[in-house]
Image 1 (cartoon, rainbow, N blue to C red):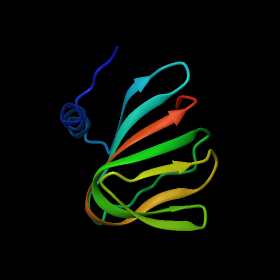
Image 2 (tube, rainbow, N blue to C red):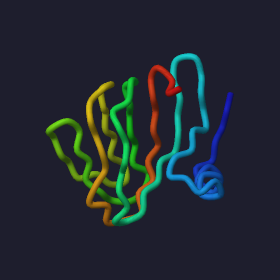
Image 3 (cartoon, rainbow, N blue to C red):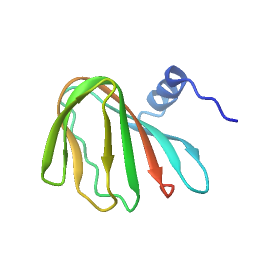
Length: 105
């Protein structure tokens, strides 16, 4: 069993001065913590893996393909592999749990 604390993961991510911290990589999946500040640009490119985003805190819009939705704490978004997507109009500090399957390289 592996147990993680979001506050510790966020501190580790911030200490490395990055917006993304991968904290788990297993044979069939990987997981990370993604953070964006209000007004910050999400520079993601489509991934080769399916993704699930769970918004832990914050508020933003996300566009996946041609669809856009407002997301906030508790929102869960599925993004199929290869589909362009990005967070935008971030109005509150955004923290997102990201799960990739298969694992991200």
